[in-house]
Length: 121
Length: 121
DNA sequence: CTTGAACCTGACACTGATGTCAACTCCTAC
DNA sequence: GTAGGAGTTGACATCAGTGTCAGGTTCAAG
Image (cartoon, rainbow over all chains, first blue to last red; front, side, top):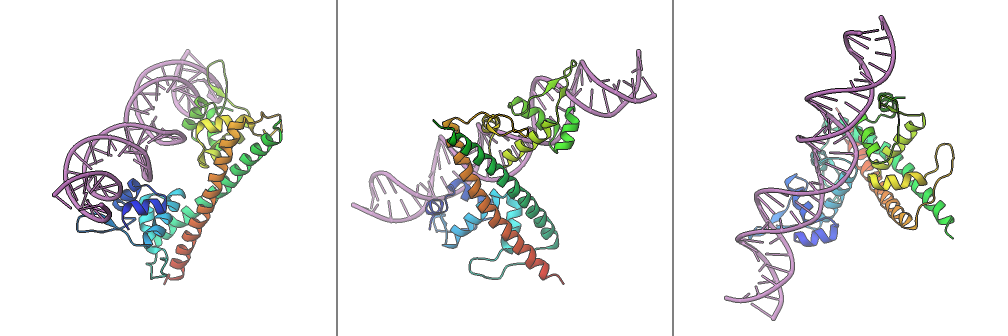
């Protein structure tokens, strides 16, 4: 598929997809005319990248991480280096703290929403 | 307490605390000389603000939300306006989606970490 | 062919919380 | 009173992903 379809199906802008490519997060074949051509796998890849961005990882970390992830086809994946494992563990801990905070904030929002809704005349 | 102690106890930089004040998120008494003076309540407030920032709310939303939150003393809190409730509900939904994504990303990290650790010679 | 939608690269802007520096003032311990 | 750590304001920088525009090329349908 071309970039427009991938953008539509993944919910990520074309701009971002091109950016991902510059960051080494998303390779694309090219047509003879130079247009990007993606396989089905790209949709999952983009969504996963997006989720990692949302988790606060930057491009570089994601780029290091991607080859270590089990692909959808269950293919072979590289093992992470020792240094990378240390960094990823730190990220994981940060994410865990973040999740805790998010749940707390969400509950606060819920309470405010509920309180206001109860008080509606 | 003065700003340095608050920064230390809340884990938020002095710079950010002053910024919070400009955004109406954190009021401070002033000494005759003009230095900020905070009560004990400020520590909780700052931490809560920080958590809301982490949840992706911007200053304006937080400023609207704060007076609707139950204070630590359980004091009276304003009810949110209808419009605000709609916006907060949308934020809550976004946060819930984010939590789901974060858990997924964390699990991916865990798998990579585990895989690499198992393979250590 | 031709036409229009889709795609290309490159450049610039933005967002918004936070870092950092400068120049100055306040507070407290001696 | 004085030294120096702590605080003040104001200005400018940064980060990194994303929006957007310009000017040109490619692709596919008629």
